Amino acid sequence: MATATNGLASWRNLDHALGEDCLRISSYNVHRCVGRDGRMDVARVARVIDELGCDIVGLQEVDNLANGSHESMQLDFLASATGMEAIAGHTIVNHEGSFGNALLTRRPVLAVRRHDLSYHRREPRGAIDVDLEVKDEVVRVIVTHLGLRPAERRFQVRQMLKLLHDIPPERNVVVLGDINEWLPLGRPLRWLHGLLGRAPAERSFPSGLPLFALDRVWVRPRHTLLAFETHRSPTARIASDHLPVKAIVAPGMPAARSQVPHVKRPPRSAALRAVSSGRP
Image (cartoon, rainbow, N blue to C red; front, side, top):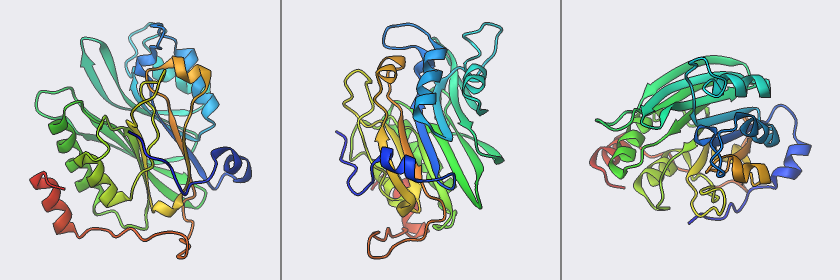
């Protein structure tokens, strides 16, 4: 079950008060733009993205392939409809069609990296790893969608931890996506919390009656995360089987020692021993 987002401010209040030096970022599993009514409606998903009011939207299960039909070019349509730049990730091909991760952004893109997180013969999985310019700061944003089986997720999080561990703790990092972790104390969550600081959790799945916090946003340094919430508009409740989550981040904001608890960064050897052995 989801936990409360204690200690974070109201999204609505901050959104009106803060300027462009803050980053508004969202994670949204669009379910191939097929809503709870069984209809594929890309324009409806675009309306939800507009409602979010975010500079960055990490997408999961969006059609990344253009085969000539209007509905198959989902990513291109969403980018055009929202006025954002699109970056496609690895593509999953299965009996349901072709889809994958993507990132929509209004911020300048400085670098793009794509990481293969595929596990044995399971569906191909990956992460989009992008450096973005936010005023005078560089923010590294990683978008992913982890697998359905526990062993698969553990493998994928180990790969991500190896990628993240050498990033200096003061560097602006955002990791977001559909983590597919149903257990609030699951090892993949504990490992990511240990390295990046605890991510807030709000119920986002299923969208009609949310019960599970599958969609997460980690922010480091943790004190730069100012607000987090699930977007629960009437359109969002029907446009996909997931609700989007969104956060406000203040890159470069100094820590207030009296208000922000210190998150200890685990030693490299200890962290890698934990993930390689499969123990917390």
